[in-house]
Each structure stands twice: as structure tokens, then as C-alpha cells.
Length: 254
Image (cartoon, rainbow, N blue to C red; front, side, top):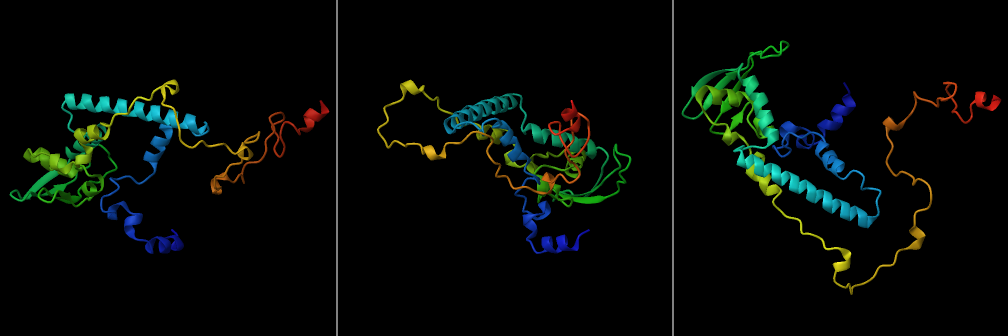
């Protein structure tokens, strides 16, 4: 669609912008959604004083760890080997796998050909063939390499020959790894009245940097989404455009 964009991307290393060539390091993530999740956890803290930001961050992160630690313990007690995320993905792939057919080529070395079916979605054509190799833990669809858990083609082979998909699931997606992530404990912070006397240097605030009244000017870089080329001022009194309620002629006449 754009020769200039194609030229720009072609000059970059493919692992920098293509999941298929990133060496499997992104685990399928193509966006900054995870950063937004953590940003959401800290929502409301950004405009507080520094001391309040530190305290709020401490208690919210501790609350997050306690919650995740309990989830991990419950899953271990219930014999769930994988995280909730992966189990949902595996269940979706198992539904697809029911429509695939498997042809063995080398059972000893674990080589199979999988032909996809149409499945529940009518618009799908099906009939595509993929090679699953259990010895190398690969599939020619490359989803195993990108996402680090078995695709529907691998699960079709597992179902047909009573094989375990466990070797295809990355250790980072296991409940034991999830548990180790949230094992660290936060130490309780004593009330300030119980703190030891501080004998170090004392900092004096620069009064010239005290924020003045009014809303601070935003330092965010503007882009094309900030342009209001198709939207002008609209009056809430007469519904006219090009002015607001304060400068409306009807108000002046009244």
C-alpha cells in the first residue's frame, strides 16, 4: 500500500518488528498491553506527592502479590499444571483439533502430518497441511515457536495417539513458575512514630519550584489524533458552531 513504508521496514532487522522472526522472545505479545495493565494497577497515584506515591505503590504491589500468591496456591492444590491464560488457550485449540485429521509418517521419531478441517466457522476452507515433529517440539505453522504452547495441530496428534502435550508448554507458563514469581514477601513498615532517629543529611525543598495555581502545562507530544480539524466549537445554548455558550449571541440578547 505504501512503497515508502515498505522501504523503511525492509531496511530494519526483521526480529525488531516481526514476531515470526523475533527468536521466540516476545511470547506472542505484539502490543504494550502488559504495560497498560500495570499502569492500571497504579491508577490515581501519578498526581500525588512523592511520599504518597511511594506508599501507595508499596501497598498496591503488596496487595497484587498476595492476590496472585493465593491464586497460585489454589491452582497447585487443584492440580492445575498450567496458568489460567494457557489453559484457556489450550481449550480453544482442542476445540479446533477435533476437526483435524492426522497421518503418521514416523511414529518412532514423532513425525506426523496434520490436515485441518473447516471446523465450526463456515468461512474457513480447511485442507491445509502442517508437519508436527515431537522430537524437535515444532510445527510448521510456527505458532509453537511464537506462543510457546501447543497449537491445535500438536493437540490433534496428542489426541489421536494418546501423547502428552506437556513438553510443548514452556516452563514459564507452569503454575510452579507462576508461584515462584509471587513468592517474595513484603516486609511490614512500622509507623513513623516507631522509626529510629535519623542522623543523615537533611534536604531542604527549593521554594522556587513550588507549583503555582492552575493546571500545569502538558508535556505530552501531540500527534494527528489531537488535531480537531473536523470538530469546532459548539454552543450548548443554541447548538450553533464556531462559538460557545459564553459568547453566544442569544445569551447577549437575553
